[in-house]
Length: 106
Image (cartoon, rainbow, N blue to C red; front, side, top):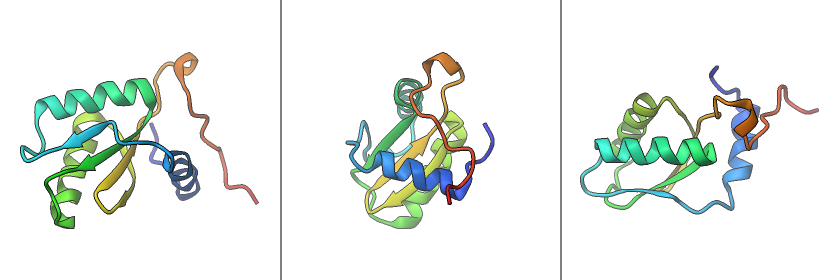
């Protein structure tokens, strides 16, 4: 997957606005089970919200976000407070739920 452009991230943030978090990061931080849960959630939904339960420092959340991006080959769409949103397009075009815009409207 190519890196997302700004207008695509904006589109995805709009879709994610009403979503509830499906993955929670606790005191253990990054773990294999977290990576597995993220992988499964991204396969199923493509767009996933994650809530940081234990981490309040923005630097720590950003570091964990980078680890998740590398481990499950996804891209962060946005970080607001204790919620971060990730996107990974489904490899199988038949199973895709989100149709990304190709260029900015306007």
